[in-house]
Amino acid sequence: MKYIRLILFFLFTFLITWACWWGLALLVNLNILHHGQAYYIVILFIGSLGPSFSPFITFALTGNKRGFKIYLCRLFRWRLNIFWYILPFIITFGASLLSVYFLIILSGNRFTIGMNGPWFMLFPLFLLMLAGGGLEEFGWRGLALPEMEKYYSPLFSGLVIGLVWLIWHYPLIVIKGAYYSMDLIIFTIAIIGLSLILTWIYDHTQSIIICMIAHASYNMAIATGIFGYFLQDGYYTKALINSIILLLTGLFLLLAFPKAKVNMKLTQTACP
Image 1 (cartoon, rainbow, N blue to C red):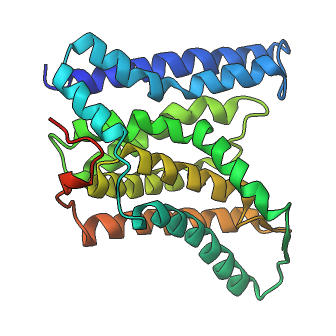
Image 2 (image 1 turned 30 degrees about the horizontal axis):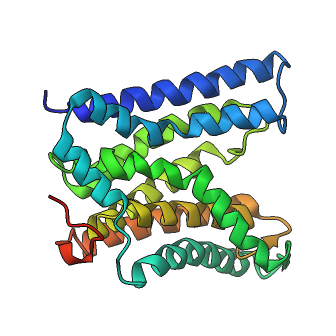
Image 3 (image 1 turned 120 degrees about the horizontal axis):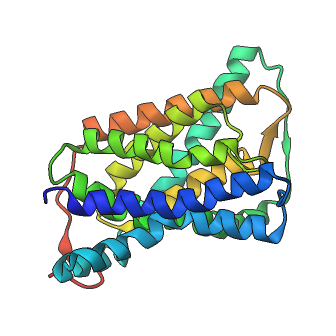
């Protein structure tokens, strides 16, 4: 079957995640669980691992040993130029900084910027975001994107995966206390923009690890504001500008710098 791996991946991803998250939504609405409780956090986290578990289930069911070896090769591809480790932070935090700059310009400099916590807390926060978001890349860019790109262009593949990714997140928008309180329109623009950026990064590196770092850096940029800075008001406008910048950046990268051939010598272990 032409799309069998893609279908199985989406099926098990949604099955695992939505069973946890819709179940959590029900428990919260029944006042059985509340935000901050241990079981609440555990169920939320297990649900987020749907895209992480599904590739392994998919390969086990399809019995494609060579495909699985190639997947593992891309999962552990880390010997890349330092540029690829720095670029995700430049893009994500650069978008946040630009959004604040434009907001200040548009508002006539009426917003106040201040420090929000010590700078060194960024390091544990990044590790938290790597576990709480980066692990999703085992599936979204690790399996879904390569399968999509067998039949479609990177731009189309990135857009489709972005829309599926958006729908996958939906329970978090309705669960009381969950961390996705962002306006749905803004979130849609942001997640499609991020999907396009991650598509471009994966196509040029074939590295799931780099995509994990890029995903975590975006989550960290959102969580901290801008390197621990925050605005006293104007958050909605800033978030909208930030999302538009991400979308335009993703479109620009995919159109101006199309898919490149990857140097296989950069891999830790050459793919078969």
